[in-house]
Length: 371
Image (cartoon, rainbow, N blue to C red; front, side):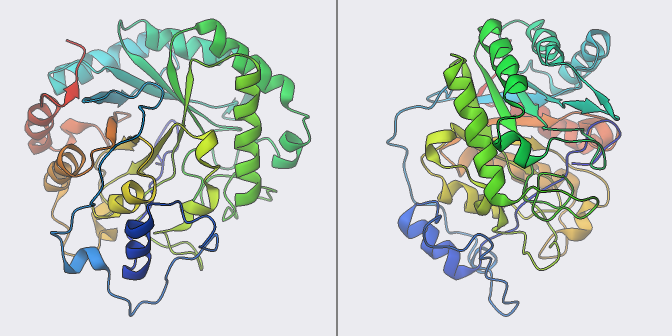
């Protein structure tokens, strides 16, 4: 989604009927049967979810729990800027006052550059310690292999795959191991959009990243963490739910091209905002039923409702209520929700009606609160 400090866009719409049926029948990733960008773009194909909104994904969790996954609880999470301890504490206090409950998961972004300035690997330890200043929370780090600014510097995929950046990632893995406590780590989130250099669709400056290279980069970094004994880290793969198309690529299905494989992913997640119909999440839940889901960042933002389909857009407060309804009652493998509390455009109190909804729903017994 895009904002003043770190950019965080949004992902997925929904499956066309044929793709949804194939996913629900096989509960597979579709990696061997679908082309990387096989979206079902025919505008004349009716979207199944819009025609029959009573259909519920028909599956049960029978798998072992993943790293950090809770059996019967959902992490109450929030994303907060961790650039400084003072700024973090101020925002954290305000969030708790608004939410009425303390989170059990706190996330942040951790780029390798910020506004063109390269950051040392130790900046990651700083962010972990800032989050760890709140007792009894699980950190959730969203690592960028470059700048948070889309036009900023970034690592070339070919250099990473050639081993030229191994030293950097070995040090990051050492920091993770030395930190010792469990945490979630995402690498290059929202890769299926067109706003980050690690996307195959990125056009703002030359890039050598493709979907195939993205998967290989993820696997290489994952292996480095295992080799360094950083087994306290759970890897969360986090594409974006999008309410618009990008060039010839439909937004509903493009994320599949970037999936590194079950052996390299502990959690799957989505950035999900109010430009997207909630039935888009069926796609994720039914494609990866053997992984816990994290709503990796979510919220409502002005003007996004114009992209929502089908119109009319129900309104920000209604969209928030629907998000809670779906995540608490529709998906048995939804295990974390991290609200993007990052500034006036997305803060809960931007819409007064949202505050009451958020406070009531986050107090649901299904959530693991830190009170």
